[in-house]
Structure formats: C-alpha cells, structure tokens
Image (cartoon, rainbow, N blue to C red; front, side, top):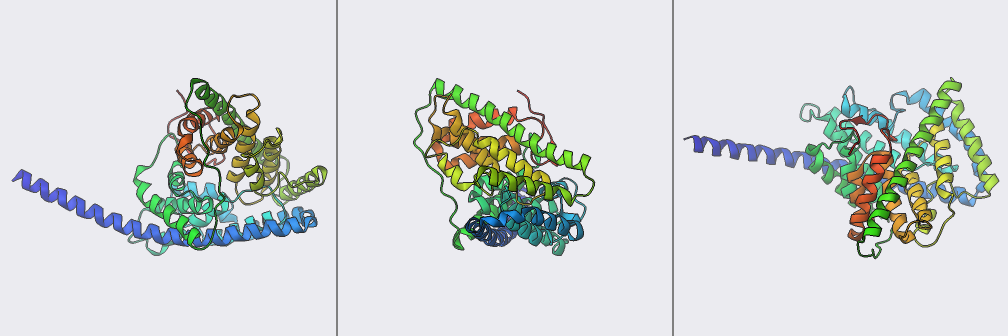
Length: 413
C-alpha cells in the first residue's frame, strides 16, 4: 500500500512538474521573441548611428548638449527607471512594483543617441533593460497565474543579453548569475535558457549578423601556459577592479561636487569632445568593435586599454546611456594583446582570455564568462580561459559594475 501511494505521489509530482515546465517554457519563448525583436531593432539602430557620426564627425560637438537633453528627459519622465540594470536587480531581490514599460523606449533612444554623437558606451545595458522591461509586463497582466516575478525578470535579462551578443548559453546564465556574488539560482536555468535561445534565434532570423570572433588553434596545455594564464588572470582582475573604481569614482565625484544632475553629462560630453580632437581619432569612442577585432590579428597600442577605461568612465560616470560590457571586452582584448610582450602566449590567445576575463571580474559572473569563451572562441580555450577567469574574478575586488549585486559567499580561497 505504501509503495502504491508513493508511486501515485511520484506520478503526480512528475505531471505537475511537466505542466509547470511547459507553461514557463512557453512564456520564455514569447519573452525571448519579443526581446529578440527589440534587440534587432536596437542593433541596427546603433550601427546606423555610428555610421552616421563617422561620416559627419562634426556631430560630436553636440555631445554635451545631447547629454544634457537625455539627463533632462530622464529627470522629468524617467525617474523611476533611471537606475537601469540596478533597478532590475533590486526588483528581483525585493519585488515591489512592475517596472514601467517606459524603460524600454527610454533606454533605446538614450543609448542610440549616445552612440549617434560619439559617447563611449556599450549596448548590453540597453538590451538587458529592454528585455526585463518587456518581460515584466507579463507579470502585470498575468499576475494571478505567474506569481514569480523574479523568474520573469531573469528571463528578460537572459534574452536581452543573449540576443545582443549572440551567445545564448552564457546569456542564460548571466541572467541569474549576476544577481549574487558566490551562488547561482538553479531554478531559473531552464526558463532562462529557453528565453535566451529564443531571443538569439529571433535576431538571427531577422537578419542580425553577430560579430564573428576567432576560433583559434590553441597550443597543447603546458605548465608554462597554465601559470601564464593565471598570471594574466590576476592582471585582468586588477584591471577590472580599476575599471569599476573609475566609474564609481566619477559618479561619486559628481554627486559630491554638483547637486544638479543635469550638469555631469555636459561636463562628460565636453571632456569626450576635447579628447576626440586632441587624439584626432574616435579610437576610444562608441563600441570599438574594429579595435577588438584588430587585437586578434595584429599588435595594438599598449595604452589602448587605459584609453578605453578613461573614456568609458567619463561617459558612463557622467550619465550617458548604453552599458559597460562592450567596453570591458575592448579593455580585456587590448590588454591581453599587450601582455603578449611579457607572457609566453601568443597575442590572439591572450586577447581572447582578456576579452572574457575582464568582463568576468567586473561583472562578477565567472560561470557565464567561461561559457562565453566556449561560444565565441571554441572549446580549445577551455583550460586557459577557466584559469584566467577564476583568477580575474578573485582579484577583481568585492564590488562590480552592478552595485545592486548581493554577496552570498565572499571571494576567498
């Protein structure tokens, strides 16, 4: 009799689990498709904006004015969504109210305009905010059926990250790994993975060609290579710490010295305009994808990573919209390229290690970064990438680019 009752309960559990899985996966597909559509439009718009600015270099002169207007618009119409990714993470930790849908068009326009006039910002922030802003509307309209807003927001974040970078598996993990330092929310794995895959393939079907990086031939694992990867990881982690410190320092400086939050973007815009004409180059403006690709094929300037840190801290710290992750990829790839002068590993491999390791340290997402390395550079990078990423994560400090992350287990060995 006990055995029979156990089997009935077991079958009931399986049936209920199957029903829940089907419902959540269906919702994840819808969220992924909508996020992928938004990311497609966003990616095309950013490409258009950068092309327009490069063919009309004088447009960068209006960057301070644009910074003022975007800040004013957020101050008047977007106070509730001004915290961006940190607002999303806060809502997952402590749900209070549905994220206003206005977050989606506001971050879209703010990021595209920032690129149009030459700010040094990324694009993951916009994509993640659009994905979460879209997904959270389902929790509002389907509240009686879907009480787990946290999971819905995580699916939106995963779909946004995966669709904008073309990395569905790492995108899925990023959506819940970024919430805590030192732990993962495994319950979110399947829905986030489905949402990320749906978002990624939506962009592909709509004609987005994600930036192709290099699947390289990696040398046989050696003791020298292992210790070199660890040493590089330590440097990548310290650089990630410098990047995070720079952005927070700029923000804190403005808060202490300037009470009117419309002024910092003007100052930041003026600094970026001066740098553009001083260097006679936009090398450290916008996404910098051409410099990232060059890091894998030739030696770049040894100071490129410092130039990008300074320019991104100036832009993001003063309030321009877009994100930081593309800048982290740029910093990591160019730094890795430079480390080839002192470490016995070829520069394309070190560029690949830096690409994922600086991101891992600054975002505190080592697992997503290891998977990202596989997706972008192939399985041959596995051992070296894992070592460099873990070392970077450990040496990057207790804080990251998302101040709303909570520490579950402190970094230690």
